Length: 244
Image 1 (cartoon, one colour):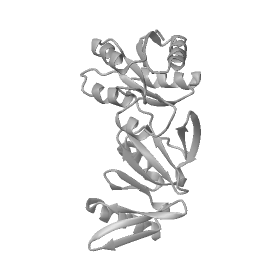
Image 2 (spheres, one colour):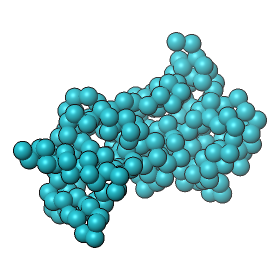
Image 3 (tube, one colour):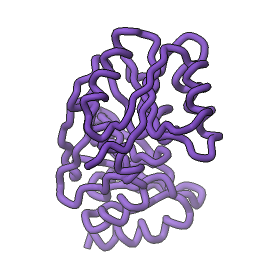
Image 4 (spheres, one colour):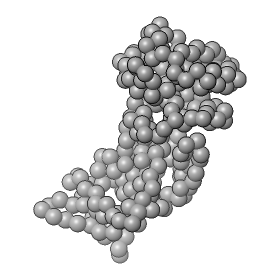
């Protein structure tokens, strides 16, 4: 595959900047790499165009990576964004900005190559697994979560947060609508435009003042989820069918 991506690396820590540039130059999909430790300078370079992929340090003096990402949202042809940080605190906000990826320092070469692969796919989303194992990633480590253990799933921008019955949660990059369609045969049903529940984990169905809700496990406790009126009848019919 010929090198086609022109990258910009933005980080106020010179050793990290140098390391990222060196690693990216080793990737045969990267045609060129530019670098700066200044958010203001990064914005100037981005305004000139010709950059396909930008690696943004989240925490920088002056313009932060999140500030730059917000400004890029106004660009007609914005580059794809990969956030780079030593902390996970801003992960959800980063995903809401449609970032291609979120890398934790120290950067491992194989993990960086995966970010480039995602970027070179030009925003192609990973479809949800059709089997009972879902690959999830945390701090550069891929783990597998049993689909049957997911109590409910919640839309978060272009991502879905899987809420496991043991109280843990994981983000995967796929639209909720696609996941709902793929997982319907496994007993998952949509109760709201942003929520899908696993009927196997529904502990209670509550109806009060004409409003319906379901109770599902969340670690050592439970959580109550409201059911949208348009989904109430279908949900109750499905639960009744499973009880027969």
